[in-house]
Image: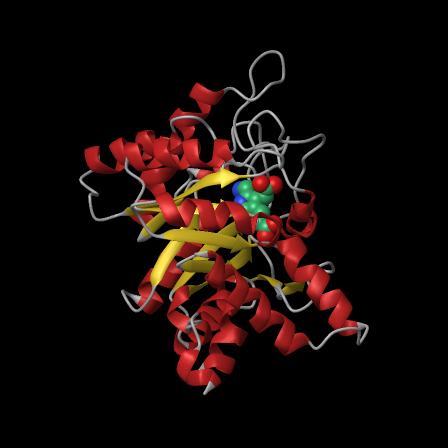
Amino acid sequence: MRRLVSETTLRPRQLILPMFVAEGAEAPRPIGSMPGVLQHTRESLRKAAVDAVRAGVGGLMLFGVPATRDARGSGATDENGILNVALRDLRAELGDDTVLMADTCLDEFTDHGHCGVLDAAGGVDNDATLDRYADMARAQAEAGAHMLGPSGMMDGQVGVLRRALDDAGRTDVGILAYSAKYASAFYGPFREAVDSQLQGDRNTYQQDPANAREALREVELDVAEGADAVMIKPAMTYLDVVRAVAENSPVPVAAYNISGEYSMVEAAAEKGWIDRERTVLETLTSIRRAGADLILTYWAAEAAAWLD
Ligand code: PBG
């Protein structure tokens, strides 16, 4: 009877697996603060991606960890940069079997760790960054991404990406916009995952956790600029925002169940304080119940196998 009247579905196709690939890695490297998550080699990435798609996940979101960094984040736009190389690997391997997505942001590639390029005063230069994102969009589309994930929270980034793609004849490439991305302490483990060089914070471009209305405005702007789907991030501490956006958005809504959310559950489960599988499924179900159509989660492949 519970199955008959259950209101919320959780299906493998609704899950997107974020994955990390490290340039020059000879073996997969464990990420200490994210037990079970790896910085992949090109080869181990390929295998893990195939396994995840076989398990039924709806998409993959790829992050690159370069061997060298500079102020402009050159590796992000270099066709031989690790993210673009890995996109080509996965597109060749998987074709259209999954939705292949890429993080369209500079922070993994800059030596200062910010999501954009800096001005003379050391602040992030919004408009100069947009030019870099346009180059990155072209490179990622060329490398085989089906969908781009602009995560840098620069004003106007969705419109600039859409125009860059259209001008390159790539009307087929979609945009999953990180519309409402909060300046969150829960990103801590991700910084280890990508060897982030960041000193300080991202408060000049990511949102204040105190603000909900601002998220609706950001979503509205991104939709007007051409977003095909919008994202709220983090998920667990922003379920009210997910709900509000789901009630207003004309496009699919994604939520990113981020690194710190993953690590908290893993740490408590490791101590035997909570039941891991039940907690994971309850977490994902609650994000769906709040109104997210799609969930980016490091548990995607494992949860997909459980749900199958
Ligand atoms: C920025 C980016 C971040 C995450 C995804 N894209 C880090 C940040 O904004 O500091 C975080 C993901 C996670 O914590 O799981 N390119």
